[in-house]
Structure formats: structure tokens, C-alpha cells
Image 1 (tube, rainbow, N blue to C red):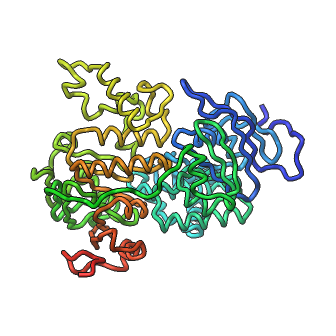
Image 2 (cartoon, rainbow, N blue to C red):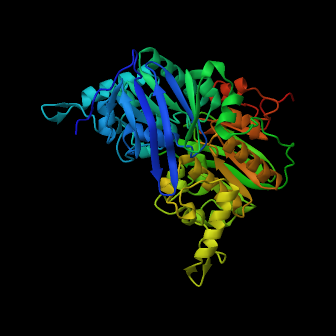
Image 3 (cartoon, helix red, strand yellow):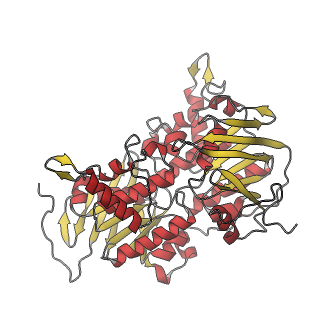
Length: 528
């Protein structure tokens, strides 16, 4: 079959991409129900909707990862058949995926050129590829080490690799699926500028995001989906965040976090002089870090991605060995105990990478819900799983945290949307018996309605006497949720702040290393 099928009657200025009446079904759910989407040449078109609304599915149909049961796709007024990503690439369509499509054991350079290798006389010409990648990374401010292995770099760096993969292929239609979910505010600003430049060059961009500020800032038009159906398309300049959020969730959303002042109690977590070795270089990723978290307070670790936050959490939760120092939970030394023993001691962990450390993707939702508890009497008797109890527990968590899945508890985790995977992990970790909640990017990839609900849950955890350690790259989230802010820079705590008495600008100076709290115990940003 011809990759580009028959030409249809073309309008005077055909849309660069037109998806007509696209319907895509999965077992138990209609992910896309007769959706029509039109992309103009040189525009940035945002796609907005709740978790599970069908945004990523629709873009996966356009990129050839899924085949729609109904509907047609037109490229420049010509009806086309997109059977797989190779067809999409041949048509000049590229995609940055929400969940990275990278080979962990390959280098950055190998991942970028994979499938589009430059050859000379039948041999791989890596020098030319390296030159092009280096030029692109410098041009767009996406600096990465081409020789680093994917498994050894941060999530934020992996995101940059995904973007470079698409730019390397000179695509003219660019799909960004939640590209800013793991970027810092500075990196987001740079990406917005990159997107505007690409559009000015004549490239057309489809931009999936839950962040209304980004959509308002960078997009020309916005199409809103709800429960697999198109609600409408609006000109961004003539709408507001409130109107968009109302279209998306069907109700008014509160953007501010309501919480009473913290009433801290006993110290729950105490970290003394922690050092964690870096996988990328010889020096420590975390160097001589000390702090504590008390019951009834939310302490936030803020900082630009790659400054030791990931390694700090790995050392704290047992995912990486601690080089030196001491970790105490509830007065008990847990520095060298296993992940399970930390869990049983009262530590819950919402991980940064939900696929790598949060879920077993080929397990069902109900199996994932009891990963740390299947051996408890509630779910096990004489060595046998009590399946009815597991099912009832999974259904309860799914209902309380609005986890949507086509086949309920029997849904394979891999087949759930990223936002619903995240809500499942959040529900599982918050429901367990614990005295410390370590929440790393807890609202990553969630829509505004789900973010509002999760923020309320985190505040309730604090008010119920739990100690909360929040690690977030979202400055708005840091300022709204935290009772104390600790800034990390190059593996060290460089300042402690009261969110009521510090500005985002001052935080940014500490995060960039321009300022440092030299007083040691004195709280930075205070008047004393």
C-alpha cells in the first residue's frame, strides 16, 4: 500500500495536519470518540484535558503507535496512511513522548541517532552525527554529554535527549507530550523560546500540557478534550486559565492551596552528614547533608534538576548506598537497612520515576497496589494471596483517588495513562501505615483537578501528624505547599527558608548558586 494515499480536494490553505473523526478503542474504554483536530502551518496548538482524556492516545495515532478504528488523517490536504512511526517520520512528523523511548544502556548520542544513523560506504559515521547533535544542543540550549549512558543521567537530561532526537530528524510537525513535566523553571522558559523559534521557522507544533500558564504563554490555539471527546477549540489570546480549566474538568478549580499554619511535633526523620557517591563522576552527588523533618510539617527540597536531589532520595529510601553519614527514622538507625525494612519502619515513597521505581508495568493495577503489602495478614493467609481482599482494596484506593482504567483492577499498569499511573502510586503510598512520606514530584503529569486533590491530600497527611519530605522542581508547588524550604546546589544544602518570607527571585539565586547561607544554623531570608 502507498504510504501517501489519494489526494482529496484541497482548500486554499490546507491544514498541515487534519485528523477527522478519529475513534480509538481499548478493552473497556473509548479513548478517542470521533475527535477532529486541525493544525495550521507555523502555529503552536495546545492539547488540554484531564488525565485519561485521550490526549496522548490521539497523538499516538498521529505518530503511528496506534491504529484508529475510525477516522482519517490528512497531511497538507492529502489523505495519508500512518501505519507505524516510520510512516510518520517519512511524513515529517516527530514526537517527544511523555514516557521516554530511550535505551538505558546506550549513550546519549546512540539514542539520538538510533534509526536515523549517518553512514558512509556502509559504515556508521559517528563524527558527522556527533557534530550535528552538538550544534543542535548548543543552538537550542539543550546541553547534554553525548557519551553519557542514559541510565546514568537525570530524568531532566533524558527529556533533553528526547527533544534532540526529534530535532535531529528535521521534522516539520513536532508533537510535544508533556515536555516540561521534569524541567526546571529556567529550562521551561528556554523551551518556550525554542518552541516559538521553531514555529517562526515554519514548523507546526502540537503541545500537550496540563500547565495552564504554559498554554496561555506559548500557544496560539487550544483544543480541550474531556473523557475521550472534544469539548472545543479556542483562540488562546481570547480565553483565560479559569475558562480553560472549567472546560477541562467541568467545574471550577481552586489554584491556591488552603492550609493552616503547621504545628510541628516530634522529629521523625533525621539525616546527619549524608554523602552519596555520584554515578557520573568521582565526587559526591550528595555531600555532607544534614537536616530533620518533624511530624506535622512539610519540608521541601528545592533546586535545579541534577543538583543531588535524586541521589539524596535514593540514599534516604535505600535505592542507593550511603557513602557516609546517618539516617534515623523515628529514632531508629536505618542507614544500612533494606528498602522493605524502611517501608515496614514507616516510610512511604512516591518516586520520581513512576515506571522505574513505582510500578511493575506488566502487573495489573491490583497487583501493583499491594506490592509492599502482599505478605501482610490482610492480603495473605498461609502463604496464599487473598485475591478478594486485594481486589476490594484496589477498588477502594482507585475510587478514593479517582484512578481511571478501562478494565478496573484487572487493567495492566502499562495500558493506563501516565496521570492515572501516578494517582495509583500516590493513593497506594498515602494509604499505607507510615510516619514519613517522601514525595518526589508527586503531581508530575497530573491535570489541574488532580493536582488540587493531591495537594489537599498532602496537607491532610501533615495535619494528621505525618512528616512530609517534598522534593519538587515546581516553584509554585514549593511555595504553596511547604512549611520550610531547603535549597540544594551541587549536592549541598545552601539555604533554609520560610516560604512566607522569601521571594521566588531570592530562591532562584540560591538555586543557581549565586547566594549561599553562610550563617549555618540561621534561616536564610529571615529578618533576625
